Amino acid sequence: MAESAITFEGWRYAHYFEFVRRIDRNVTVRCKLCPGQKLLSTAVNTTSNLNKHLQRTHAKVKLIAKDPRTQSEDVVSAPPPTPKQQQLPVTKAEMDRLVASFIVEKMLPICTVESPSHRSEICCAKYR
Image 1 (cartoon, one colour):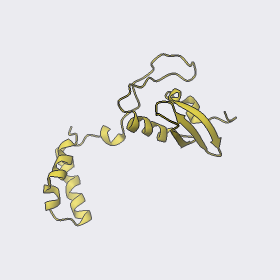
Image 2 (cartoon, rainbow, N blue to C red):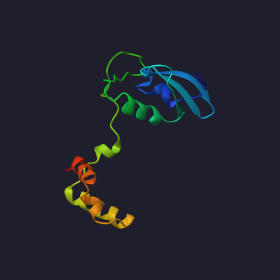
Image 3 (cartoon, rainbow, N blue to C red):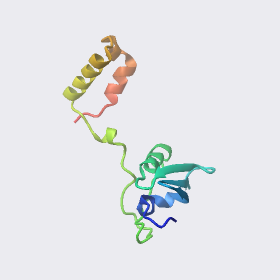
């Protein structure tokens, strides 16, 4: 690999990807879980694109984190964290305020929030 440090090399889920190349500040890797030759690109200082790929495409796969320093098969943590939006529950009062702000900001009619699709979105939201 390249001579300077790449965040990908120290990432605990790097074993699910095969390093392909580094061009300037970008790294290209191949996902070992995807059928075919799925290439993904990420910046040298982050693994967020790869993390999102695992969360979205391989959500049903039980991922095993490995310590990249020791290359051991030991599990060091659970699968990658879910997106931040799902980790931030809100109270009913906060949700009501957010819906009202949405209506006012977009200048939408009140019937927008009465539609079945909008109600199902709100019902799926997590409350504290």
